[in-house]
Image 1 (cartoon, rainbow, N blue to C red):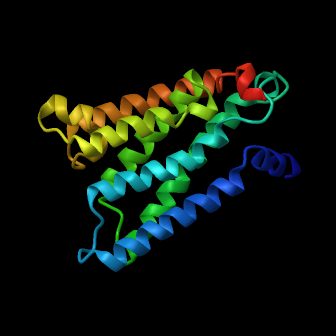
Image 2: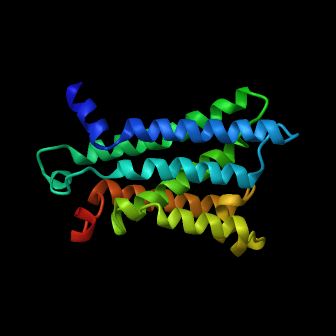
Image 3: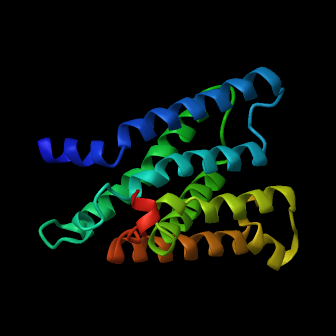
Length: 198
């Protein structure tokens, strides 16, 4: 148990959980206060998911790049478990609101956006490094929210903001999820460069 506690603190998991819970509570309170509908808009939903994924992003890498690659630890199992918890955390927060008068839904959009954006974040951690892993989800999501599109290609490009029954959106989210998680589990986060270590 001590090893797990050290792992969680070295990855700043408690701080990420606190920030995520606070951000979700604020979004829920603001929507409850200023919206007359029971369900948040698709834009508010995707931006809240983006916030939750962004606070999880720093936990994908530890303080020591060499330790993240040593054979002394079962990294494949640890990374898989970490990503499963990183998916579960936003899902639990957002799906808990289904029991309230102001809901983050529909359920299909929540699952698709959380898994797809986390896969994109994991892909960013593997290719750009943990410190920059949130760049890809942020850029793509803001573009999708500002420039909504229709049609098969448009739905694929703006998958985060599409209806839960959009097949192109589901396919893109699934591809990002599988690719990002597979690369992160097998390779881990990209080592920092010298300026990032300072």
